[in-house]
Image 1 (cartoon, helix red, strand yellow):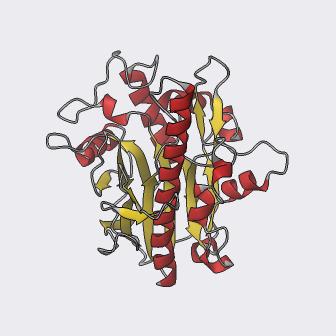
Image 2: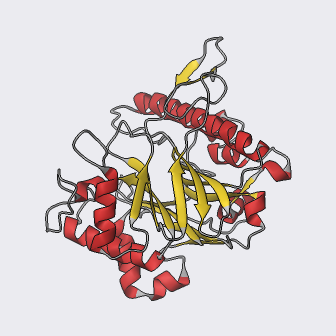
Length: 339
């Protein structure tokens, strides 16, 4: 089975108010790229991945008049994808949802949020988490603007496992006007992202203690060396989610993250390519992950970042290479598992 995560930049901009694709030459949410071109590129990429399930980050908007599932299922029909059923959990406060597009012939999934009423003990992800981050004796109230998607899954062969799809807080100080404001916003965003990862880790530990095979995947907006505020905290958010200080059986695993944190002098893996605001070359970053519990690591996993330059097969296929660059500023990450 192939399970993937893919952050599609402003997917919602490709649909009209009736959740129908707009395949024209009008502007998409991507700078300098027409809607029709981005749609065609996305269709090519999704067909190339040929996954049994894709966690879509920045999925189309869910609202009183718009439906994430209707939009994604229409997209799947347009490109004749195997994963043609969509599922969403708690709606986002933004126009960027977290959804699963999957093949119902091989996988059964159910939105199954966990957590209790205690705000200091990993409440439901649509709730409020209280934690004293600045040690001033007063708890900070943390929310997810994009609540993680918690799933109970079962393969057609009867293998059961859990999935948590996440899009953590961005640390970029967007919309600031002065260096001082950028500093304050950057630290505040890093603090929120850190707290969200602590909240997520508490849920992970509960699943691992219950013996649940677990996949945590999505965009953590974090990785080694991504910003100057890392030194303010004992661990990065990724290390927290992975359980870097936990016993081996309680850790989550992704070889791309392990390579990046090893710091052995080689160029770290990258899953995204962002334009430089100062006009320089694009900035590469590792922010998207597929993390597996130890029991799933015994099922012959093979990870792949579908990078247009770093993956030899993607680089050699001219059509796929270009489609990956046009479709989004992130690239898909997949894992093949014997389940």
